[in-house]
Length: 359
Image (cartoon, rainbow, N blue to C red; front, side, top):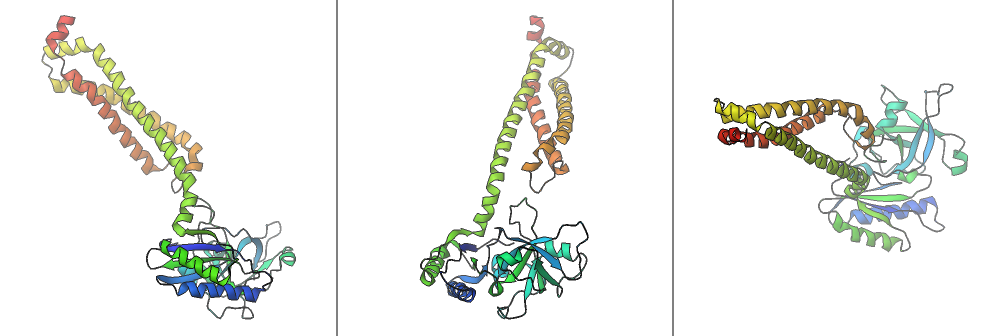
């Protein structure tokens, strides 16, 4: 979904004594007045705002698709959406059409479903024009109708349970046909959306002074809420990785520095016999290079074995991603060669006369 310039506000239903028709009328009044504010391009109504789960999972059936014996009944989230909800949210309509203003109580019952549910209920088929219905014993207790509803469109998936969560199957019912109208507003602006927060709040307060308003956030802020724990994990792991990189570089330089000091006499003899500074540098670098190559080989093998333990911290990348392994190997090689260069340069500056006198 396109989260730019989107403001969301959750407005749970609290219309004392109001029936569904009155509740829908008040929500639509809020929507129309907010849509008239300067800078607003679209306003949508829904039982939940994008990137939030509605939490109402119901069993669903598709016409002509019987459930096999022993197979669990498919389920999907129950949500409502008004015309313009998907446009305001930046959720694409992949097939069919959006809801219209004529989809109201008393009109033909219709639904829109997301791609996850469409692929599950109608694999390889066009879902538009087919029918689905809620089912299960729970319907009699919550007042949801089990009538057949015609699918008029398919919308894209959204990661409502977090960016690393599997997209849930979802059924959208027209807001005006909902069994218990309640939810939130999705406001898309042409510019700075944060400046609309106070104006939208005044509109809601003017229509329903006692109406609670919760989680007045931009869509980017909602997305960042789900990213924040992963970002903290990433920063911690990256900090440990940088520390390990520094320790590795110091360790390589220290080992080679000790090796150079132990070979001072040998280097002096080689230089007195005609070896120049470049020969000495190559000798020390080749010794350090062998250590680096050995360390890289062991490190890649260790990463292939142990990286699966970090799979829960990863998003959008496999534990053994070739590009990541290659990039880290190149970085470690560069750090290792850089650490080797310091003792190599020191060895090249050894005075052969001083080295021989020490012998």
